[in-house]
Length: 138
Image 1 (cartoon, rainbow, N blue to C red):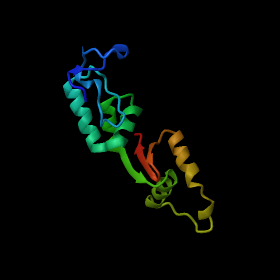
Image 2 (cartoon, helix red, strand yellow; image 1 turned 30 degrees about the vertical axis):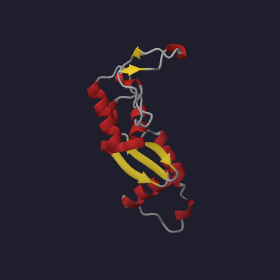
Image 3 (cartoon, rainbow, N blue to C red; image 1 turned 180 degrees about the vertical axis):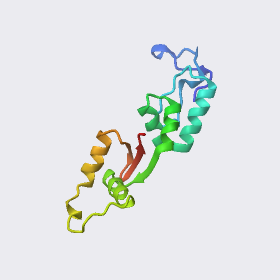
Image 4 (cartoon, rainbow, N blue to C red; image 1 turned 120 degrees about the horizontal axis):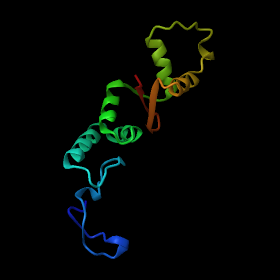
């Protein structure tokens, strides 16, 4: 991190210039942070990202870098699944939906989850292989 005086001059001249402290923000998982953000804003975002990591940064970006909306989204966090299809299948099994054994193999759980996402019922963020995070959009 550069600090208050930065050696990164304009057009690579190497001159020292006064820059805001937030000019370089490593460890923010790619979350956008204005270089003129207040210290309180930087601390709030850092705490949010420390708690939620890369997923928090993705949710923060999804809501147009609005920290309040990103924090509120975690109130409707449905959990982590290996795939969207696993979420849809588990949801239907947990709600007690009876599926006859003869028809079980004909259900396309991926299509059902995709429809839920397209209808705006859920938001889905993938952070890695078989690491799918689902949020309700109430």
